[in-house]
Image: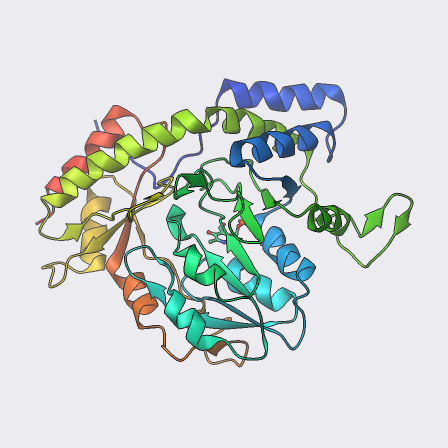
Length: 365
Ligand SMILES: Cc1ncc(COP(=O)(O)O)c(C=O)c1O
């Protein structure tokens, strides 16, 4: 039997079908009672004061920066080593992204590089919990600027025993894209402890509407009740899903520990990732290239991906004046793109799929 293991497979079953059916039968499909319930349940899961659901994490990031007053003429310190939406959200506010490098072991913003990049124009820091790994937040919070957390990948990840989004920063943003641990098709959410920010975010996701009036220019960033109902079922299963993902990560780490080619990722003390993605890394002096490793897995029916893209290397940014690079350069970001291989990891992986990944790791020499 040939197996075909995707990099990720969203966990969609009878409960999701029933949830979607319930909404359709109710006759109310736009933002309504299901969105409100999803927000309350997510706030409880995160121990966050307020959760505002929106149409995507991209929207959440843009709104987070806007409510903090970021706009034209401002700089936002962020990372290039992220999905392009992180940088695009800064541009969408009219501000300029200032890219700083990442720490190679956790893929997150290097706090020393962030400190060195601050200028009088710096208005905020947009830090990414990349691939689910919590970045080194404490020193970033000490820099005296508002910190927005791009926690798109990091629902259920923990820092010092507390789930990300509590929030440690001013606002944390989550994604429910199909590659994430809770998948609603598209969808996003902002978590904040500040009730005034939450109120303004609720206006801004809906045309700036407060009651009968439109109090400031806004846009339509709403999540629908269909998405929220699906999200609620997945949120209920998330604690068990995280346990399963940790079991898979431990099994892959044990196999990779024996590999002469790829090294396993590791969690820093006090940190737990949700294992949204499983990034293996070429060992120094590895006898195989990233392309050869990916071809090896593909030949065994196991899909992989290369490292996270860097915005400054993509055509939308490269060679343009849309961004600025911090004084430390982006060497680690560029190396990680080329040295990382993302292996399949998702809850709901079958025993045959799991074994296929492990035997492909074992066969790599
Ligand atoms: C780090 C990061 N930020 C932002 C996004 C954008 O999220 P969304 O697809 O919900 O807009 C993603 C991925 O999709 C991401 O991985």
